[in-house]
Length: 82
Image (cartoon, rainbow, N blue to C red):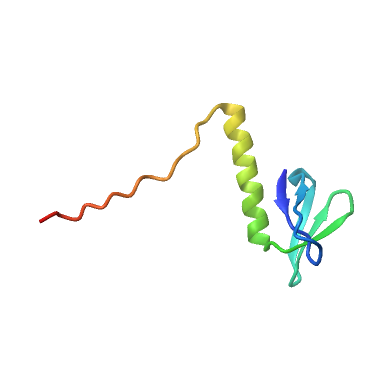
């Protein structure tokens, strides 16, 4: 499930099963239409919703196939010392 925030309500998060998403529109608010016919208006942009879905699916795949999480490479400062 992904975490979103409904527009115009309290700051409490909403958990959404992303398998129910049919469409995501920016009109200019982000409107998510579900396969059930329900519609949600959320504060996140369509790109943020897509990123949340992608991250959730990647996490499920990692757990399913036992793939370790890829960490960002360390940044080293190779400034010469005098």
